Image (cartoon, rainbow, N blue to C red; front, side, top):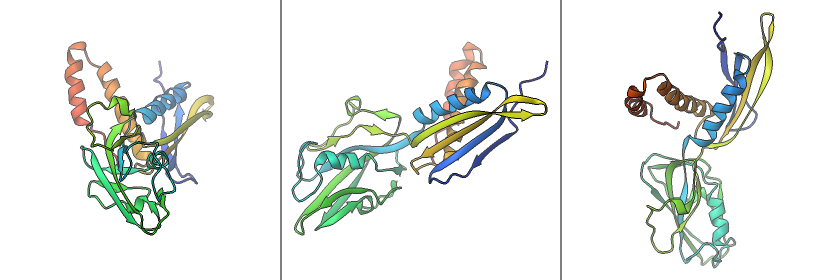
Length: 248
Protein backbone atom coordinates (compact mmCIF):
# COMPACT_ATOMS: atom_id res chain seq x y z
CA UNK A 1 0.00 0.00 0.00
CA UNK A 2 1.41 3.39 -0.98
CA UNK A 3 2.07 6.08 1.63
CA UNK A 4 -0.09 9.16 2.02
CA UNK A 5 1.29 11.88 -0.24
CA UNK A 6 3.14 14.66 1.58
CA UNK A 7 3.31 18.24 0.21
CA UNK A 8 6.32 18.92 -1.99
CA UNK A 9 5.85 22.72 -2.06
CA UNK A 10 5.34 25.00 0.94
CA UNK A 11 5.84 28.67 0.15
CA UNK A 12 4.79 32.20 1.08
CA UNK A 13 3.57 34.52 -1.66
CA UNK A 14 3.57 38.31 -1.49
CA UNK A 15 0.40 40.22 -0.71
CA UNK A 16 -0.51 43.78 -1.67
CA UNK A 17 -1.57 44.51 1.91
CA UNK A 18 1.00 45.29 4.64
CA UNK A 19 1.58 42.66 7.35
CA UNK A 20 -0.20 40.04 5.27
CA UNK A 21 1.22 36.83 3.84
CA UNK A 22 -0.23 34.06 1.68
CA UNK A 23 0.81 30.51 2.55
CA UNK A 24 0.47 27.93 -0.23
CA UNK A 25 0.85 24.22 0.55
CA UNK A 26 0.57 21.65 -2.26
CA UNK A 27 -0.11 18.93 -3.14
CA UNK A 28 -1.92 17.56 -0.08
CA UNK A 29 -3.63 14.18 0.10
CA UNK A 30 -7.38 14.55 -0.50
CA UNK A 31 -9.00 16.11 2.58
CA UNK A 32 -5.74 17.16 4.20
CA UNK A 33 -5.98 20.71 2.90
CA UNK A 34 -8.97 21.30 5.16
CA UNK A 35 -7.37 19.36 8.02
CA UNK A 36 -4.18 21.45 7.93
CA UNK A 37 -5.95 24.73 7.25
CA UNK A 38 -8.44 24.37 10.09
CA UNK A 39 -5.82 23.27 12.64
CA UNK A 40 -3.40 26.08 11.77
CA UNK A 41 -6.16 28.68 11.72
CA UNK A 42 -7.40 27.76 15.20
CA UNK A 43 -3.90 27.87 16.70
CA UNK A 44 -3.01 31.12 14.93
CA UNK A 45 -6.09 32.87 16.31
CA UNK A 46 -6.01 31.49 19.85
CA UNK A 47 -2.54 30.53 21.00
CA UNK A 48 0.21 32.89 19.85
CA UNK A 49 1.85 35.19 22.41
CA UNK A 50 1.50 38.94 22.03
CA UNK A 51 1.25 42.15 24.05
CA UNK A 52 -1.55 44.57 24.90
CA UNK A 53 -2.59 47.45 27.13
CA UNK A 54 -4.11 46.14 30.38
CA UNK A 55 -4.60 49.35 32.39
CA UNK A 56 -4.43 53.14 32.11
CA UNK A 57 -4.20 56.03 34.56
CA UNK A 58 -5.10 59.50 33.27
CA UNK A 59 -4.44 62.60 35.33
CA UNK A 60 -7.70 63.94 36.76
CA UNK A 61 -9.76 60.90 35.75
CA UNK A 62 -11.35 58.56 38.30
CA UNK A 63 -13.54 56.38 36.09
CA UNK A 64 -13.85 55.38 32.43
CA UNK A 65 -17.01 57.40 31.69
CA UNK A 66 -15.57 60.73 32.82
CA UNK A 67 -15.12 63.72 30.53
CA UNK A 68 -11.64 65.26 30.55
CA UNK A 69 -11.18 69.01 30.73
CA UNK A 70 -9.47 70.50 27.64
CA UNK A 71 -9.45 67.12 25.86
CA UNK A 72 -11.78 66.35 22.96
CA UNK A 73 -12.15 62.67 23.85
CA UNK A 74 -13.62 61.34 27.08
CA UNK A 75 -11.89 58.58 29.04
CA UNK A 76 -13.80 55.80 27.29
CA UNK A 77 -12.78 57.02 23.82
CA UNK A 78 -9.13 57.17 24.90
CA UNK A 79 -9.36 53.61 26.22
CA UNK A 80 -10.80 52.45 22.90
CA UNK A 81 -7.90 54.15 21.10
CA UNK A 82 -5.38 52.45 23.40
CA UNK A 83 -6.82 49.04 22.56
CA UNK A 84 -5.40 49.58 19.06
CA UNK A 85 -1.88 50.23 20.40
CA UNK A 86 0.43 47.47 19.18
CA UNK A 87 3.83 46.84 20.64
CA UNK A 88 6.58 44.31 21.31
CA UNK A 89 7.25 43.81 25.02
CA UNK A 90 10.64 42.37 25.99
CA UNK A 91 9.92 41.99 29.72
CA UNK A 92 8.01 39.16 31.40
CA UNK A 93 6.63 41.66 33.92
CA UNK A 94 4.09 44.45 33.27
CA UNK A 95 5.67 47.66 31.96
CA UNK A 96 4.35 51.18 32.63
CA UNK A 97 4.63 53.65 29.75
CA UNK A 98 4.21 57.38 30.28
CA UNK A 99 2.92 60.32 28.25
CA UNK A 100 3.29 63.96 29.31
CA UNK A 101 2.13 66.68 26.93
CA UNK A 102 1.46 70.42 27.24
CA UNK A 103 -0.58 72.70 25.00
CA UNK A 104 -2.77 72.12 21.96
CA UNK A 105 -1.66 68.86 20.42
CA UNK A 106 -2.70 65.63 18.76
CA UNK A 107 -1.29 63.11 21.20
CA UNK A 108 -0.16 59.96 19.40
CA UNK A 109 1.71 56.80 20.34
CA UNK A 110 4.89 58.56 19.19
CA UNK A 111 4.56 60.76 22.30
CA UNK A 112 5.04 57.79 24.62
CA UNK A 113 8.32 58.20 26.48
CA UNK A 114 10.96 55.72 25.24
CA UNK A 115 11.26 52.51 27.24
CA UNK A 116 13.92 49.85 26.70
CA UNK A 117 11.42 47.06 27.39
CA UNK A 118 8.86 48.13 24.77
CA UNK A 119 8.90 48.82 21.02
CA UNK A 120 5.83 50.63 19.66
CA UNK A 121 4.86 49.28 16.23
CA UNK A 122 2.20 51.87 15.30
CA UNK A 123 3.52 55.24 16.58
CA UNK A 124 1.05 57.10 14.34
CA UNK A 125 -1.92 55.90 16.44
CA UNK A 126 -4.05 58.83 17.68
CA UNK A 127 -4.66 58.69 21.43
CA UNK A 128 -6.23 62.07 22.26
CA UNK A 129 -6.69 65.68 21.07
CA UNK A 130 -5.71 68.34 23.61
CA UNK A 131 -7.63 71.57 22.89
CA UNK A 132 -6.09 74.22 25.17
CA UNK A 133 -2.70 75.95 25.25
CA UNK A 134 -2.70 75.85 29.04
CA UNK A 135 -3.67 72.18 29.34
CA UNK A 136 -1.38 69.43 30.60
CA UNK A 137 -2.14 65.87 29.56
CA UNK A 138 -0.48 63.11 31.57
CA UNK A 139 -1.11 59.40 31.38
CA UNK A 140 0.39 56.07 32.48
CA UNK A 141 -0.22 53.00 30.30
CA UNK A 142 0.36 49.48 31.61
CA UNK A 143 1.30 46.88 28.99
CA UNK A 144 2.27 43.23 29.31
CA UNK A 145 2.64 39.96 27.45
CA UNK A 146 -0.12 37.39 27.20
CA UNK A 147 -2.14 35.03 25.02
CA UNK A 148 -5.67 35.18 23.70
CA UNK A 149 -8.29 37.40 25.35
CA UNK A 150 -8.18 38.55 28.97
CA UNK A 151 -11.09 40.32 30.66
CA UNK A 152 -10.31 42.72 33.50
CA UNK A 153 -12.41 40.68 35.96
CA UNK A 154 -10.29 37.59 35.30
CA UNK A 155 -7.02 39.28 36.29
CA UNK A 156 -7.68 39.09 40.03
CA UNK A 157 -3.97 39.11 40.90
CA UNK A 158 -3.46 42.64 39.55
CA UNK A 159 -3.17 45.46 42.07
CA UNK A 160 -3.75 48.99 40.74
CA UNK A 161 -3.26 52.43 42.24
CA UNK A 162 -6.28 54.60 42.93
CA UNK A 163 -7.53 56.05 39.63
CA UNK A 164 -6.11 53.26 37.47
CA UNK A 165 -8.66 51.79 35.05
CA UNK A 166 -8.36 48.14 34.00
CA UNK A 167 -8.79 47.34 30.30
CA UNK A 168 -9.95 44.12 28.63
CA UNK A 169 -6.97 42.94 26.57
CA UNK A 170 -6.64 41.05 23.28
CA UNK A 171 -3.04 39.81 23.15
CA UNK A 172 -3.20 37.93 19.86
CA UNK A 173 -0.88 39.38 17.18
CA UNK A 174 -3.13 37.92 14.47
CA UNK A 175 -5.77 40.18 12.94
CA UNK A 176 -7.31 37.74 10.50
CA UNK A 177 -6.81 34.25 9.07
CA UNK A 178 -8.67 32.74 6.16
CA UNK A 179 -8.10 29.71 3.98
CA UNK A 180 -9.48 27.93 0.97
CA UNK A 181 -8.78 24.58 -0.64
CA UNK A 182 -8.49 24.09 -4.40
CA UNK A 183 -8.01 20.96 -6.50
CA UNK A 184 -4.56 20.31 -7.88
CA UNK A 185 -3.11 17.64 -10.19
CA UNK A 186 -0.38 15.10 -9.51
CA UNK A 187 0.23 13.07 -12.63
CA UNK A 188 -3.14 11.79 -13.79
CA UNK A 189 -4.78 12.25 -10.39
CA UNK A 190 -6.67 15.54 -10.16
CA UNK A 191 -8.31 15.47 -6.72
CA UNK A 192 -5.35 16.37 -4.54
CA UNK A 193 -5.66 19.50 -2.38
CA UNK A 194 -3.96 22.87 -2.66
CA UNK A 195 -4.18 24.82 0.61
CA UNK A 196 -4.11 28.63 0.35
CA UNK A 197 -4.03 30.53 3.66
CA UNK A 198 -4.10 34.30 4.10
CA UNK A 199 -2.58 35.49 7.39
CA UNK A 200 -2.73 39.12 8.52
CA UNK A 201 -0.80 40.20 11.62
CA UNK A 202 -0.67 43.43 13.62
CA UNK A 203 2.94 44.07 12.62
CA UNK A 204 4.56 42.73 15.80
CA UNK A 205 5.23 39.38 14.13
CA UNK A 206 5.62 38.32 10.50
CA UNK A 207 3.11 35.90 8.95
CA UNK A 208 5.96 33.41 8.40
CA UNK A 209 6.99 33.50 12.08
CA UNK A 210 3.35 33.18 13.16
CA UNK A 211 2.90 30.01 11.07
CA UNK A 212 6.16 28.57 12.44
CA UNK A 213 5.05 29.13 16.04
CA UNK A 214 1.63 27.61 15.35
CA UNK A 215 3.21 24.53 13.79
CA UNK A 216 5.49 24.12 16.83
CA UNK A 217 2.49 24.23 19.17
CA UNK A 218 0.71 21.54 17.15
CA UNK A 219 3.87 19.41 17.08
CA UNK A 220 4.08 19.65 20.89
CA UNK A 221 0.62 18.12 21.19
CA UNK A 222 1.09 15.43 18.56
CA UNK A 223 4.41 14.35 20.11
CA UNK A 224 2.55 13.40 23.28
CA UNK A 225 0.34 10.98 21.34
CA UNK A 226 3.38 8.99 20.19
CA UNK A 227 4.38 8.10 23.75
CA UNK A 228 3.18 5.55 26.27
CA UNK A 229 1.07 6.97 29.13
CA UNK A 230 4.04 6.59 31.51
CA UNK A 231 6.22 8.81 29.32
CA UNK A 232 3.60 11.45 28.51
CA UNK A 233 4.07 13.68 31.56
CA UNK A 234 7.88 13.63 31.29
CA UNK A 235 7.83 14.39 27.56
CA UNK A 236 5.33 17.20 28.08
CA UNK A 237 7.72 18.93 30.47
CA UNK A 238 10.69 18.41 28.13
CA UNK A 239 8.83 19.80 25.10
CA UNK A 240 7.66 22.86 27.03
CA UNK A 241 11.24 23.66 28.03
CA UNK A 242 12.68 22.92 24.58
CA UNK A 243 10.27 25.00 22.50
CA UNK A 244 9.60 28.41 23.98
CA UNK A 245 7.30 30.89 22.19
CA UNK A 246 9.24 33.51 20.24
CA UNK A 247 8.01 36.65 18.52
CA UNK A 248 10.20 38.18 15.86
